[in-house]
Figure (cartoon, rainbow, N blue to C red):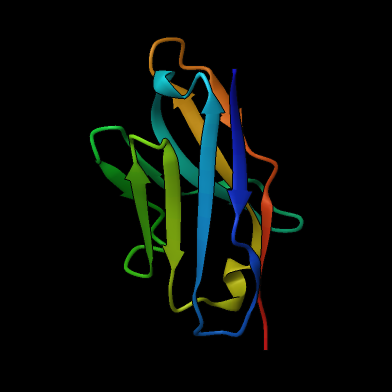
Amino acid sequence: QVQLVESGGGLVQPGGFLRLSCAASGRRFSINAMGWYRQAPGKQRELVATITSGGSTNYADSVRGRFTISRDNAKNTVNLQMNSLKPEDTAVYYCNAVEGVTLRVYWGQGTQVTVSS
């Protein structure tokens, strides 16, 4: 089992920034890819950014150039630096981890990000 705990959400004005963090515990050495997804009210959960244990990254088109995902493999933490935030970035952000062998997927409890003036 892997447990994921997110932190860093909150309320920010348009154009502002936030940094989300996610810490993995439990069978953390089994994790390959980690990432962030988000779900806005009335919409499906969507990919924001992912990063593999080797450092390869993938971003949604809507956040590329504004968001940066990073990872500390030794600590099994993943961060999401979000700059130039827009109202449409408002959502619950979920941390995600995928085990390398079993491909089992784990989710955090989510953290709210609200971009509003």
